[in-house]
Amino acid sequence: MTLTVLVTGASAGFGSAIARRFVRDGHRVIAAARRAERLRDLAAELGPAVLPWPLDVTAGEAVAGLPAALPAGWREVDVLVNNAGLALGLDPSYRARLSDWETMVATNVAGLMRVTHALLPGMVERNRGHIVNLSSTAAIYPYPGGHIYGASKAFVTQFSLNLRADLVGTHVRVTDLEPGLVGGTEFSAVRFGDAARAASVYAGTTPLTPEDIAEATAWVVNLPAHVNINRLEMMPTCQASGPLAIKRKE
Figure (cartoon, rainbow, N blue to C red):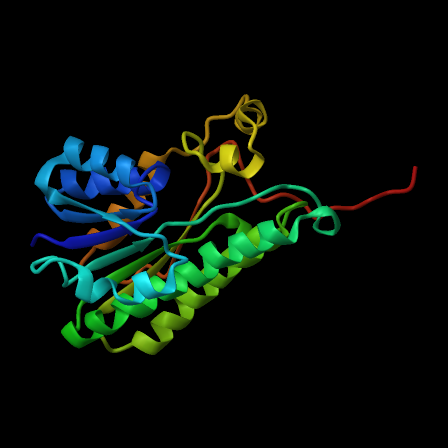
C-alpha cells in the first residue's frame, strides 16, 4: 500500500532523511518546511513522489487550513511525522533569553499541537493513520542548560501518550521517538549560532545520524497495523543516561 506521509521540518536533517526513506520505500511525501528553495531541491532530487509545501508550523491559520489547501489526491494523510523543532542556547535558565524560550515553545509545543489538531480528525474519520512525534531523550533526562528545550520535549512525549489514550480502539497509531546525540544536522549550529562550538559537541563521538532516525521512523510505521510502538528511546553507544549531579564543597 502506498502511503501519503506529511513530514514537517523536511528541508534538512531528520526531516529530509525521513522524506528520502519513505520515497525509497515507495511512498509519497508532503515535504513541509519554511525554506521553500530547499523543498524544491528535495522535490527535484526525489521526483513526483514529493510535494513541496512551504509551511511555518507557528502560523496558526496556515496550519489550520492545511487539509483543505492540499491538492486533490494528497489530502488523505496516512502518516504525520511531527519533526519541526529546535533548541536555542545552553545558558542556565537565569541567564537565558525569554525570546529563545518563546521561540522553542512556539515551534516544539504549539506548532506540533497545531499540525496534529489539523490532521488528526481526518485520520479518525478514516479510521487509519499514524502520528510519529519527534521528542528527545531531553524529555526524560535533564541536563544543565536544557530547561525549556527539555520541558518542550517532555510535552511532546506526554502529549503522544495521551493521544494514544484518546485513540484506543481506533486504528490510528501514535509513536514518540526520543533520540539522544545525533550528528549531521543543523541542530547544534542553530542552537549556538557558532559552527566551531556546534562541531565540538560531536568531537570524539560516533553519534546517531539522521538516517538512523529515518530507519526508526520507517520501522514503527511499517509494523503490522495492530502494533503500536508507544515510545522508542535511541542513543548511540557512546552515550548513556548520566548519574545524578552532586556539587561537593571544595
